[in-house]
Amino acid sequence: MAHLLLALLLGVAAPQVPRAPYVATPPDVVARMLALATVTSRDVVYDLGCGDGRVVIAAAQKFGAHGVGVDIDPVRIAEAQRNAARAQVEHLVTFKLQDALDTDVSEATVVTLYLLSAQNVQLRPILTRQLRPGARIVSHNFAMGDWDPDVVDVFTSADGQSRTLYLWKVDGRVRP
Ligand SMILES: C[S@@+](CC[C@H](N)C(=O)[O-])C[C@H]1O[C@@H](n2cnc3c(N)ncnc32)[C@H](O)[C@@H]1O
Picture 1: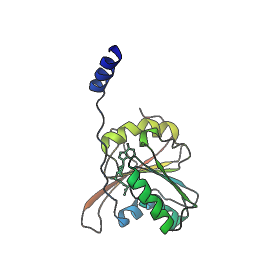
Picture 2: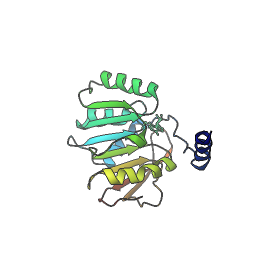
Picture 3: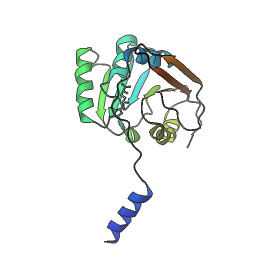
């Protein structure tokens, strides 16, 4: 009974942060994110909340980069795996059914995000602790709390929508 009460209290005290729904980044915006991160064949690109896998698949197709996509939704992961097979980049990319918050990103040199601001803020200490200096983080439309980006790129994409891309360069300082 005491355990149940404690669990209920913790649940009330620590409400769940809402999760980004599935909305795909259009291809021209994906290309701009990869260009902003200056992705090359030497990079390992992690997309946290990878949807249908398009960001890491594009990085593999265009640059020969290795990539890992994680998503909390099994339907998306199955779709990403099918798309990787169709694009013939299965040797370069891996998709995992996983919460972004539980993902070890220490081998990543580039992390891409299209999550909500509150999720980015939750990820900030994890990313800044695990990523090596020189790694780049690019986020589509959502900032990361009070961590000033190195570059903000505002433009209109091919579908006529205003987009903002944020780039942070990891410098070894942990940002809680
Ligand atoms: C806005 S979509 C972006 C998809 C893809 N990155 C893109 O840019 O096309 C967000 C994705 O993040 C996933 N997602 C949301 N919260 C997550 C979490 N905590 N861990 C892993 N995936 C998450 C959703 O299932 C969804 O597929």
